[in-house]
Amino acid sequence: MSIDPIRTRKKKVLILAYYFPPLGMGGVQRVTKFVKYLPLFGWKPYVLTVKDTDYWAKDYSLLKELPSEAKVIRTGSFDPLRVSWILKSLLKRRERRKESAGQDNLRRSRLSSWFFFPDTKVGWLPFALMKGLFLCRKEKFDLIFSSSPPPSLHLTGYLLKLATGTPWIADFRDPWTGYKLESLPTRLHQLLRGMVERLIVSKADKVIAANPAIKGALESRNPVREKICQMSQGYDEEDFGAITSASPETFVIGYLGTFSPDCDPEPFFAALGDLIGRRVIPRHKVRLVHVGVCLGIDFDRLVQRYGLEDVVQQKGYLPHKEALKEMGRASLLLLVTSDHPLVFPAKIFECLRLGKPILGLVNPKSQIAALLNRARAGEVVSPEDQAGVKRALTSYFSAFEKGELACNTDQEVLQEFERRFLTSKLASLFDRVAGR
Image (cartoon, rainbow, N blue to C red):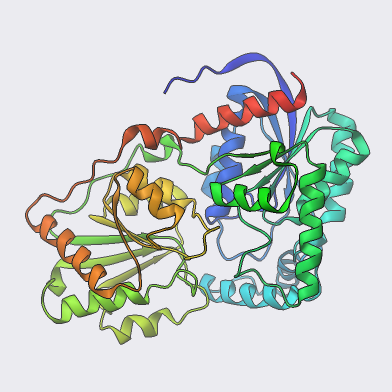
């Protein structure tokens, strides 16, 4: 897919993003890749983000992807993660096991939701607002772009627009209201969040949703449907240059991402443990490689329960390109995610690009299942269908043994989600909103 870069004088965009490198995990990829490619299409990005925080995943390699034209400005914050980092720095207790820190942060976030509104990162708002006002007056931005979570940064975008008159686009890469797993301690919190969401949607010049379900949910709750559009998550072709093929001796099942109560590995472990126990799949010929973290579950106990101690290999959190290399060595990719209709994990697009067959333990009626089927990328089985999971695993292993395991992903579908192409669409939207 040919995309011609723009070589004229660049316009300036102020990007508000709390989750930005060196923070890791999937949430940073969308803004990072936009920043990487926006200069090719006539826009110079200025990223306003937070200083170092007590986050369970750091990926300093992502900083190397930022173009020289991008400017990154970092401020302090009074949110729990930033305050925790400061306290640990003072007490010299920052060296901790990442998974443990992640569990602590998760519990702290749930507790803090009682006291922080509209979310636990609202303590960044005064810092971001003050610095944003300074930057707007100095740089004369053509556009402001805020990407949530956290949704409170959209309030910063709105206040900057109100103070400067600069056009503003709000990007929802994750659902906010209406999501059953959000931490809402009371009905009042939920009602107030809905009011803030309506304010954001009504005041933004354009609203972007990262998937069709989020777009539909926003449209159902807001009367200004004409300003809401969709722009998908995706994959960066440049991340796949050094991917190697799978090992021919071992049936390697790769899982990229977080295991949690929302992304529960137990149905898969139960099926795999049963097949190994009955010797349908020989123990010495199969491995499950997990790249990522575990939150809110006793992962080791689950592994022991199903007798998979010598089968499951945990690599932990790895830099992004290293994680993709690990998945490139897999024979089969496992996809486990929430059954909520608003959830659409960004990693699915990188799984598609890897060109491996995907076993999706997801709701067969979900938008994730629809994409896997449209791309002809693998098989979808409900996690509640143990017999179906076992059949799929047996079939994939049999094909592997015969040397016939392959995936013919639809390339036309795949190209829709390339990051450079998506950024060209974003830049075109910037042009229209900024009045170019």
